Every structure is written in structure tokens, then in C-alpha cells.
Amino acid sequence: MKKHTYLLFFFLVGLLPACQKDLLDKNPKDAYSNSSLWSSEADAQAALNGVYSSWDDNYQILYMDAISDNAYSQYYWEGYTSLGNGSASPSDTWVTDRWSPAYSAVLKCNWFLENVDQTPMDEAKKTQMKAEARFLRAYQYYTLTQLYGDVPLATKMLSQDEANTINRTPVTEVQQFVLDELGAIAPELPVSYSGNEVGKITRGAALSLKARLELYTARYADCITTSEQIMALGYSLFSSYADLFRIQNENNREVILDIQYRANDHPNSNLGVMPSSTFGGWGSLCPTQALVDSYEMSNGKTIAELNSGYDEKEPYKNRDPRLSASIAFPGQLYEGKYYNPIESNSGDYYNGGNNSKTGYLYKKFTSDLSDYDDIWNTGLNMIVIRYAEVLLTYAEAKIETGAIDNSVYDAIDAVRQRAGMPKVNRSVYAGQTAMRELVRRERRVEFALEGLRWFDIKRWKIGPQVREGKVYGTRLGKVDPKTGALTLSGDHVEVESRTFDAGRDYLWPIPRKETDVNNNLGQNPGYPN
Image 1 (cartoon, rainbow, N blue to C red):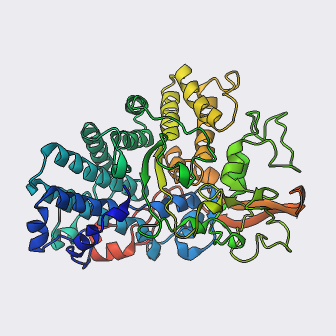
Image 2 (image 1 turned 90 degrees about the vertical axis):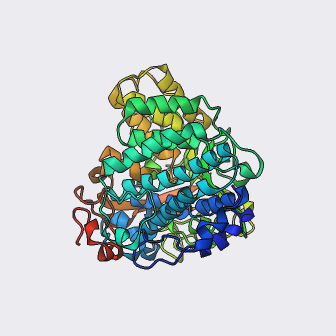
């Protein structure tokens, strides 16, 4: 839904009082907002548009990989460096980047749901609109539980006293609420929309978030069933992985859920954090050597396998095409020149200006900067869930139940072949252990910079293995400016050292500004109160 068409939202938000002591305490008390407002379907739609406008996860989706072994965030003030290296504190003001906006969105959902029934309008349309709001609320609780564990579950407007004394609800109860909501609303949502309604919540979006949470909570049988329901809705993989994320191809049949933007009116203003200063950006998010190494060779072998064809002197040749589609590496032709972060006399040098400190740049979403007149003011939609995830979710759930049949290979093969990779070698990947390794690697390279890697690390409990120790970038050397030919002679650049406490770091700290107001919230293990 292109948000530029809903200007009434800004008037409606003005009816909500400013935050006083706690984000859960924003009960609209204006008489007009609770009576005169709800006089027509148009009013109700404008209110729902306001609910949609509170859902803007773009920044967080991009930056979540910096908490994982996929990327490094070089600017502490952007909020994710300390989460990535294990030094996060409840006093870090950026922590509220998820808590505060999430509960602000929950507030708007509850406000809408408590008032829309008084609107004189078609009941079927009203039911659908309520389902959209319930999805947006469920999405916020899904995110909150993933990051903070136990969180307050508020499904109605709260008084100030209630908000300031509310307790955290056990994570399992909140997750069950999310699953129940998604299951209940899915039949009430359309399979698709047309015209200006494209971008609204669909049945596929509700089922896909449900399948994701079922996978994350190891409800594999339910996950398989839900995934099969999604697979019957008519989604398909876009033909080109490299072009999937370009603005001219948005809203294609692979996209199940996205956040809609429009330049100037409601822009996606975060893409500039990816290119380095020589391309007009900040170089904020720096892919790691560990991510680069996770891409297979074009023959389907990992770089560590015997006779894989991997050459340390030409490490980027004959690799999975998703590597060059997602990451700019030394010697690659990017924006009309051969990218050179490995020589000190180059404007791209890793240790200069706002350049990537690993020597690697993310290209996904910015593979061709000529797509945008202004990289800081774009209309590129941010994909939240796409069909490739459903296929790999289905495959993983089947693998975890031990039901490795042809449908599992078919799902993984579809994702691989779309990217230009060969089908899975069934003689190598036959048992559960091997297939688990394969599907986990597929998820990592397929969804790099799409905000999923950290949640995979969390649910697989592999933090100590992948988030502990030194972070490295590219090797130094030379790039031929005419051909891009590499001469690698130095060591890999060392970016930072990370720690990981398995008793603490799978959860974020509860923001101190929240616990100062409501001491019933407590604090997550390992963090100071």
C-alpha cells in the first residue's frame, strides 16, 4: 500500500496524546477520536492507514545482519555495533529502536480494534480490516519475543496505572497468542490485491509469518502443514535473483510481505548506508569474510571441499552467483569501475573515509545505483517475507522431522537453480546431518542482508561458534584498474574482536528507560538492572 495516498493519517495521529511515562500508556482520550471519527468506511480506512504507517522495519531489517556473523556495523551510534560484539547495555539509548516503536504500533492496533466496530460499513470489509490490524499487532509481538523473550502482552488500551505496573508475559504465551491470531485471521484476508491496495496484508502473509514462527519454535509438523498451504496460493520464484531486489521488479510474485515506499512522500531513506563514500554512501554495513566464505563454488562444492576448484589467489572466481549479486568484492566491476578497497592509494581503500572496513560492500538493493535519482530518497519497497523463504522453511521442517523425500530436494533445488546453482548432489547430501548443514547454508546465502541470519543463529543455538572471536575482511593486495585482475599478497584485514555469552546474548536488554518507569519489567539475564 503506497502510503503517500493517506494524508489523513497525520491528522489522526494528532489525536493521540504524546507519550507521558510509558509507551503502553497512550490511550486516546479525545472525544472526537472515539466518536465523530468513526462515521464512515473512509474514516475507518484512514485510521487503518495510520496503523500501517507505524510499521516501518526497514532500518532494522537491514542492520540485523550486523548482530550476526554476516556483517559488521562500523558506526556505534547507529545502534548495532555493541549488539554485534557483545557489549550491549540497558542504558544504550538505541535499544529502544525496537521496544518503543513496537509498542507504539501495538497501541495504534489496539486503538483501531477497540473503535472500528462502531463504524457503519460493510461487515465483511470491516472484518478484513480488523484482520489486517491484528496481523500488524501480531507481527510486533513476534518481533518483541524474538528480541526480548518475555514481554508485556497488551491486547487492549491501558490506563497509565496499568501501563506503569504491567508484568511481562512468558514468551511461550505471547508466541501462542501470535500463532492463534495468525491462524484465525488468515481465512479473513484476501489472497491478493490490485491497484492501490497492493501491499496490504494478504492471507499468504499471515500464513508465512505463522510458518516462520512455527519453524523458530520447532513446531515442525505444524510448520509443514502451514507451508503447504502457502505453496498452494500461487506464489513463484522471480526469474532473476540479482534483479529481484531492484525497484523496477517490486511487487512480483515472489514477494509475500513487504513495506511499501514512495520517493519524496514516504521514502525508503536507508539505502545510502550500504555503498561507501566513493559511491555516495556511508559504508555502514560491512559484509564479513565469514559470509563470503559461506558461498559455494559454482559446481556446488564448498570452498573447503577436496577438488572444489577454489583458488586462494582468485577467491571470487567460479562462485555461487549470489555472491556477486549480493556483495561487491575486490576486482568486481561495480558502478563503472573495478572496486578496489585493498590498495591504500585507492579512493575505495578499506581504511579510509566512509568506506567498508572489511573491504566488502553489500550490493543487494543497490546493485545499480542508476535505479535511483537519490539513494537517500527512494521508493524501493523493503521485502519482509518472500516465497524462497517458504520453500526453505518447508525443507528445513521436513529435514528436522526426518522426512527427507523428493519434495525436500525439489524445494531446495528450486531456490538454487533460480540463482544459477546446480541441483543438490543427493549422494553427498542424503542424511539428516548433511541436509541440515545444506539448508542452513542455503538460508544464509539466499537471505544475506534480509534480517534473518541472527534469528537463525539464535534458534540453532550456534552463537558461541559463529559470534565469538575475531571478525575478518578481505585480503590486501592490488587490483588492475583496467581489467580488475587481483594480486592478493597481504593478510585478511582484522575488523574487531567479539565476545558471546550464551547465557545473555541471545536476548537483548530491556531498555533502562522502560524499567525505570516500571520495575515490574525486570531485566533479562546477564544484564545489569
